[in-house]
Image 1: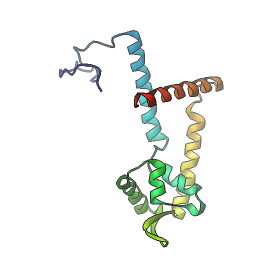
Image 2 (image 1 turned 90 degrees about the horizontal axis):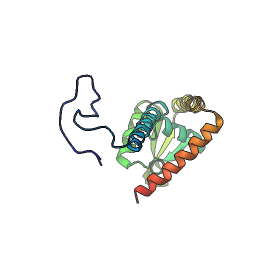
Image 3 (image 1 turned 120 degrees about the horizontal axis):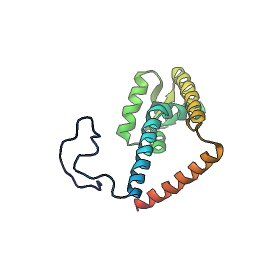
Image 4 (image 1 turned 90 degrees about the vertical axis):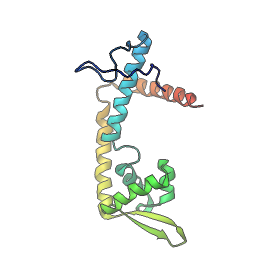
Length: 168
């Protein structure tokens, strides 16, 4: 997927390790701009994952469970919701269980299925995490006006559609 030739060479001391010394900078102004945009999107993705709760970590799972009747869902439903493989989900759930945030039990109607239920500690954590996520959303785009936010949302939607077509 690399668009530059592989050339294993050393970097200048204090230089940017992503830019080997003998490989020229972006080919054109458009390429430079594309790299700048991708770098910005990469930072935003990284920041959102670690500061906004990620997609499939503790916070999204306990917040989703907190919104369910009785604070419970089947493990299979959770996996489908977050598009997680059973092994990956099981690892996350084990950590949540060890921390006392959830309980797992067999479904009495179908012993093959596990029901995941929030504990009281899990409900409290979900409340705190959800409040933090709301605060993040309120502040994340405060540097932009409402109109700029609308424009950004429209541009990101266009990019999403284009990138989905690249996978076809």
